Amino acid sequence: MTVGYGERTTTAEGPALTVSFAAGEGQDAPLTWSQRYYLAELDAARPHGRGLTVPRLYPLRPGVGEDDVAEALRGLMERFESLRSRVVRARVAHQRVHAAGTLRVPVHDLPPDGAEAVLTGLAARPFDVVEEWPVRAAVVTEGGRPRFLAMVFSHVAVDGYALLPVSAHLVASCAAADPVARTAPHSSTPGLQPRQQAEAEASPAGQRAAERALRHAGDVMRRMPATPRTPPRAVTGERFRFLRRRSAALDLAVGAVAARTGQSPASVLAAAMMWVGAAETGAHHGFVQLVSANRLRPETVDAVLPYSQPVPCGVDLTGASFAEAVRRTATASLRAFRAGPCPPDHLAELHAAVQAERGVHLDITPTLNYRPRATTLPVRETDAAELARAAADARSEWVDSDLLWRSGHYLSVDADETGLRLVLQVDTAVHPPGRAEHRLADLEHLLCSEAAAGPDAYEPS
Picture (cartoon, one colour):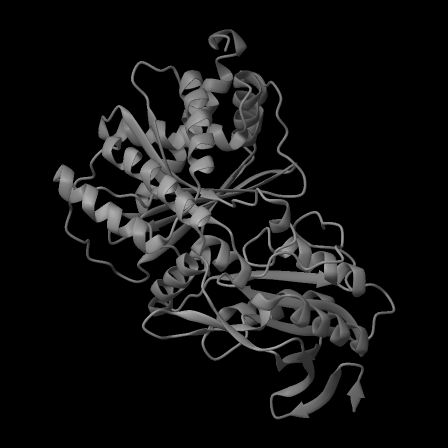
């Protein structure tokens, strides 16, 4: 049977919608800097059985039928070139934007609590960005009535901010809400497409921006502390481990230090990462990569493509109190974000050159990925008594993750009004798993001690 823009079929794999789309002309285009970064990360994660996927489970509005979902997906694929593009492996990898195609959307009739399992199943297999679309979808029905739209996106096609216009399109057509972030207003234009961004990066202005970013990165690398060279550790079981942490006391502490210093929670956490790292090594200079979304131009707001890339950030901690370290980190973070990203292969070449120049090993992979959600972490004062009461509300657990990065130490933080959700990735070939537990414990102890000290311990700006 034909359902709007999708044909309902049943095969040995079960019922599915085959959604057809057609838009414009097919064409080849370079990969953007961010896409090149994510492609390299995806290729590195694949041997470990993981991909880089961004999942979303959209509840559907009452009365929405399969034809509405099929039409919404058809419009999504036609509107955004990144979702109907595939990578072409050549001497220089690039992407091919397809003019037409089909998207197979399985239909699962399940109780509502089965929707999460469908989403997990969609994300379980790493994307083959050469052979398949960088988006997968499935409809979950209950008694034949559509209840959820499960979608998984490849990071080569989107980052978190790119899903705001995707969600706006779906909410305007069939979904009840974006399950993670505040939905952006639905725009009449699709925003910048990947080929246009690649053209901008190849322009004289884009090349000047890359040179500026590389100058900044070089300055940071020439000042950052050296990393001891150690032989790879023997690994039993999974090489990469992921420690999740929720702590009400940490939420309060980060908010209090942010309130007292007048800086963001992201700067507080970045400063704490560098402070703890410096204490461990005895260095007087801190280093961390920060993930820059780089959506500064108006035309990038509605763009469905990744803009995020890590940018190096270094801070001189000599003679600083922790409050001063937070302020220095905020200034250094702004400088790093203004310098922006650059071609990832050029950054790798610079890294090798600076290591040779200094004659030391430099680990530039420790990363903080601070991801604010629709609401914000409360920023307010606290005291030792409130922190002590909150201390019992904490939980750590080792979890699995599809997001695997080339880093021995990668801290992801999701932040909203309910608090902070931390996941620390540790490469056990570089560090023992216990290091992740110690690092998060040291981070929390530092921040809770600072918050408990009270506002009188903080000098004015």
